Image (tube, rainbow, N blue to C red; front, side):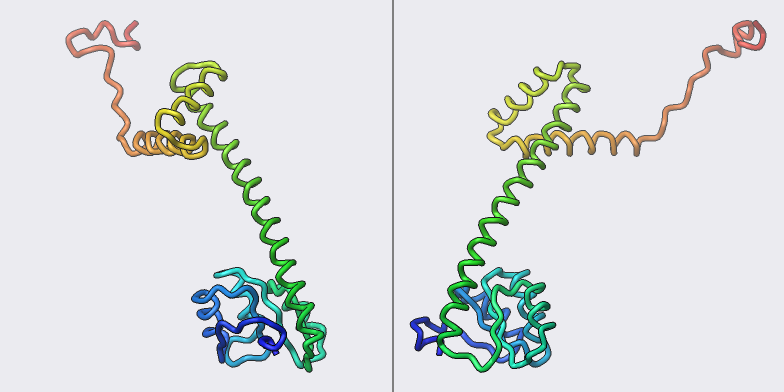
Length: 199
């Protein structure tokens, strides 16, 4: 039916583990998975595929139980069809799954960019604080120093900041491993008069 409606089948699998391997190897545009399968069922297979190699998945089921549809959605499926299936069911289901997946990818890319921006800002603030303390610089000069480090070393703000933070942690760790120095007495046995309790 997939070929009849104009698509190409790039691979098939008889069980969930093989399906995951096939998806990773062939990177299809969309995947059809039966909810009932040996060893690894369709729900768990969908979850594995989304974790290891995200592609739009449409789950097929002969079971009328709505619970499977909910579980499939929670596992990351982008479509759910109940058997028997006709071409009129399959055509829109595949198109919707692919489009929803594209929207999902765009949303996640935006979220990842936002997350990276926040992580960069947090690391830069921490690195700037370290520079201010170590070099006794005001905030503006410390930030200028950090930006200069980025240019000179051709690193991003995030990487340059993390380098400074890592170096600071390494320095503090080294200090904590060194034995504390013993306090030397301020007087000697030849000068008993300098003992504090004799004053």
